[in-house]
Length: 316
Image (cartoon, rainbow, N blue to C red; front, side, top):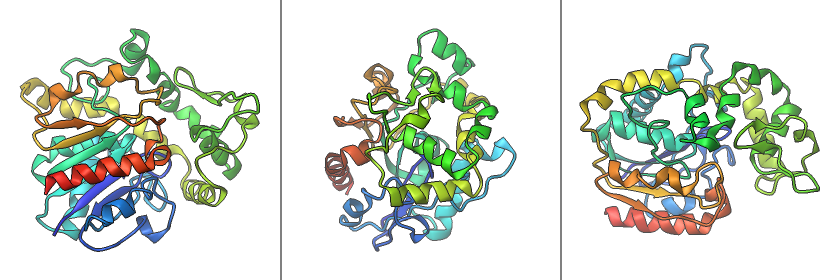
């Protein structure tokens, strides 16, 4: 039984698993996973793709303790879920954005579970996302020029941001911003250094990526528990570092399984310099860039699907 698993972490943070049957979106609700454009390409290769939403999004729980959002805890949850569906099977993992981040951690904590994995847009980039023996807060990494384009995460990890997006209209405005809505003059409501620009956000026109019906699904799903669960993904880095410190101190960790990274060349938050050293952490890494922005699996869907199909076929 062939089993493919991929997850993302945009607005609904879905996960996906696959067998040789045909299953579509998470919870069978079209449009609630940002990977729905990849599902047909993968099912055409003989995989069954399942995309359950991840913690804090859509129909999932949103527990109060941040420990439930640590990468080790989430990785364990996903492995247990897969074990209920296909006991003993290895999987192929894939993810975009925070989903990519979690893919790395599942492969780190459960290497025997992972046959191979692919990630889109977000690289493995210690010390922000990856093993490190020394703790550095993100504020230091931004200020010292290590990761200057991650300043927005300082805003997003602050719990006070949650109260700015409590109503459906506010949540819709948030999504419209992150999906690239602009003012008539072409200004964005977000910057990589500051995060949301609250004075600009109400002036944005509808974004070019998500239609109104899909936007309704996103808004209604998030409104169920609020935005706290989604932003919690930015609030566990210290706990993740503490969990991973023994592995970092061993100094021998590498990703041994075949891996694919698809960078988005027009993603201003993840410039090429962030992943130039990435191959040094892998035994077998393919990098296939696409000329797209952060939402590469939408903007460059045909090219991304072609890359994925070729890579998955090479694993057989």
